[in-house]
Length: 87
Image (cartoon, rainbow, N blue to C red; front, side):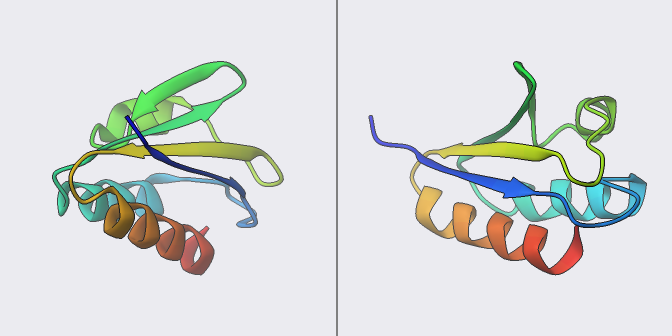
């Protein structure tokens, strides 16, 4: 099965902290596809705020986002747009 995958390097000085993490979870929940964030061999479900916060993503770190499901094209585009504009 094909899945969308992209990498993003965090630019925000605070990394992915509470506010953008909450908004990112909200963005992902608007789609039926599943989305995961991977960093340093660990991964988390982007629908789970505490799991995302627990990843401790800091400025300058590169994350990999994988999206799989019926609306993965739109979901991946929305996540990528969110990251670019907010973190």
